[in-house]
Length: 239
Image (cartoon, rainbow, N blue to C red):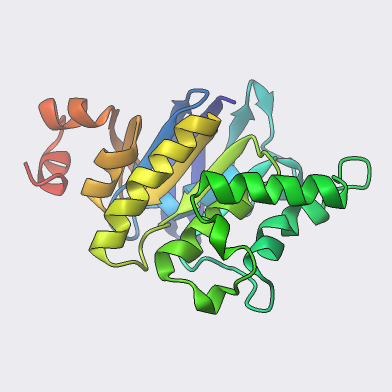
């Protein structure tokens, strides 16, 4: 599914969080919103999700305007920095949670749910954790489970908000590779928020560099390093 962001503006009182934001994420791409804290990237992600409302501007999924569509009807999977797993549920129950909330006409049978959970555990290479609880897992394992839960219902779009921020450097590096492999294997269009340049370069097809509510530059990682177009981009990328 392609995502088109058109002229998004957002103010909080006198503060301009987003100023005329426009870009496109093509079907199957992983795009990263990259920039320092307070630049507007998480606000933009929340607007794309439907968790926040823009003052003006439009959002299109595959050419269909979803600007006023409720979050639960946008077909989005979420992965957050803090995992947001249910502590009292097993790994299998956590992954199955979204499937069990689907409308009756779309809800899989228990057998289908069990099969889907098993497939996802294989995909994230953690089949042996099925009956464990979140507190019995490492941070990296918990984040993989969160990813599996996010894609269990076959969403059209995957949104990731600083998904590796709570992990140490070694685990972050391992999970970046894992995320990229999984994202490409299932072919899901994805948008990730990060302030980590190395992370953005490692996983992204497209990077959107933001600063004070505007887009400084958009491009493939190698293009940004080869042809930075502003002093801010040069400084932020450490060139």
